[in-house]
Image 1 (cartoon, one colour):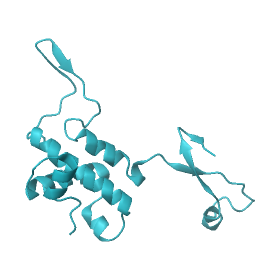
Image 2 (image 1 turned 90 degrees about the vertical axis):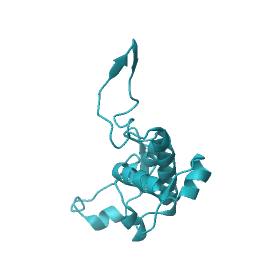
Image 3 (image 1 turned 45 degrees about the horizontal axis):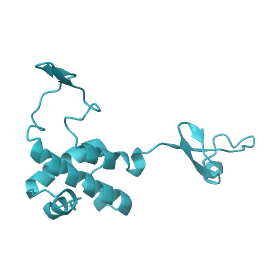
Image 4 (image 1 turned 90 degrees about the horizontal axis):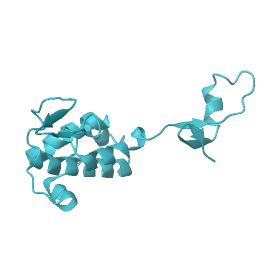
Length: 147
């Protein structure tokens, strides 16, 4: 099984010294949020660009976990206040996922905005996969077709 990151990757990317076990724990968390596994990358199902993002996500997560040792045992809360001070999490999983790891995961190709085709269909083409294969793909932005 290929690891997405090593302790030396964490040192060079996130400037933190971690153990192999720290990297493994970080990888499991990244797998959970990225919706993929190292087995998928071993099978050749993940592009080199996505592997780079996953390596960075694991490195950032491993470094972040050094400053948040309770990440595996903390309690879920919606909000908290103490001595007149309060905080609101930036996203639902902010107590579990490093901010830079989240940014890397959000940029994975399967996590980006969807794409849509524009087609001129002939009668009978409505449910034709072959007809769909011949249509141009164009990126979407906020629900509107670009280009």
